Length: 145
Ligand SMILES: [Zn+2]
Image (cartoon, rainbow, N blue to C red; front, side):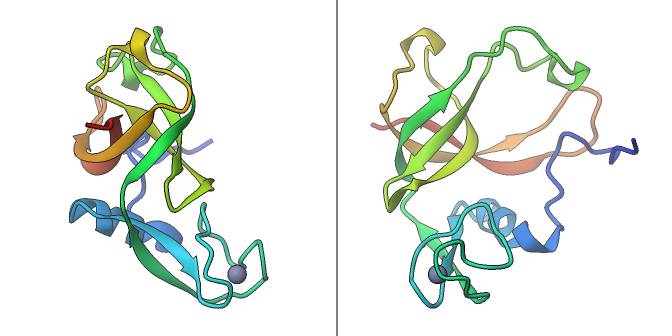
């Protein structure tokens, strides 16, 4: 299998999700909103999963949410993660629609203090990986202040 040299950095140029990364670079959390039914649709897809419309407008959301799920990774299962462990990949349910859950990482938090449904808010941080050139500004989450 061919892997992009920048893996696991996200491919920010990939069209279906480019606006998400462009927003992050400007410290805005942007999610596609269906032009017909008005619901947020994440992950981006061709048709709204509620009403099958194919037209979306990217919407900037508050960046507030609650923690839906997480794990604490203590072993670097890829060499690129060596500098990161321990870390906490997570799914965050957005305030605007808790059915919209963003794959992210919890930071600035005692990993043992993470709790189900705790309020969190977005922060924008450069992410990089051991042995991989470049960095990408990504929406990560911290405990809500
Ligand atoms: Zn729709």
